[in-house]
Image (cartoon, rainbow, N blue to C red; front, side):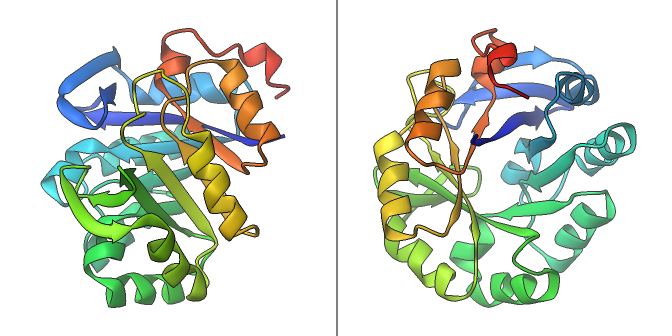
Length: 237
């Protein structure tokens, strides 16, 4: 079965979801991310993806304390992203309890730094964040587009022993319009041993089953869960 990873996105200490990465199109779902994390664990989930959207916008970690609280109050395996730009940031994320970190902007803008982190912390603890809009990588909380095409970008880092990639189709994220399955299949065809985490657009339980049938290793979902469109009892957890 595909690895199931619910998401908590944080702005102003609250659990939110954006639409297509637009900070002006924000839905607030819960006041307490910690309570949401505990709920996920109670339902049988073992993984959690946390995005510090304040951090992504501010270019430094903002919500480390919430990460620390979630880790102290659950046994979830947590990957944390958003605002990790410096050695101090990544050290903070791990000291607050993150099991893994997702790194996007630094991988694009500061390759040497990313590779040093990869060597220091190991490929099991570093997830390469590849946020995509119209086939090109975006950074800085999706506020900045680049000229980097997705597949060559991934190929370069896979040569450097990256094995975990979180790929988000920004045009799908928060839209409940269905995931970019063909994009993820294309990535898997090129890199069949990659642990690819698909993100963006999941609208219902059937979307998760379809990604599983397509051979995608893992999936992140958020809005569909918060709006009651994920039937957890059908997921076999």
